[in-house]
Image (cartoon, rainbow, N blue to C red; front, side):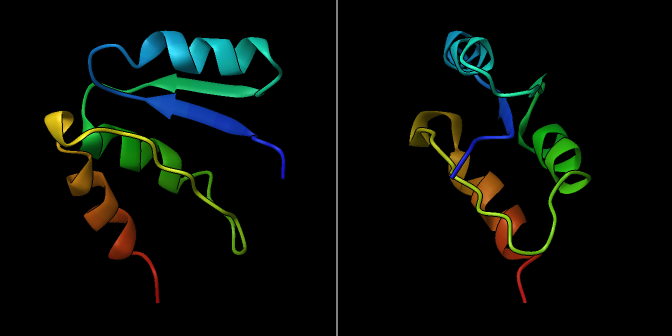
Length: 73
């Protein structure tokens, strides 16, 4: 599998995503919050895509997961 986009929000996430971009991930986005991140990602997802979510409970990443789950049949 190859990463085709890296996006993040929350304190401390920027350096990780920028490192991924520097390693060849072609799309990069820094969102203000989970809803903005979801809106950006949703426009790019295609059937069969795999989404890896890495986050902490401190930034309430579970809210982003619930947004994704609402899109899955």
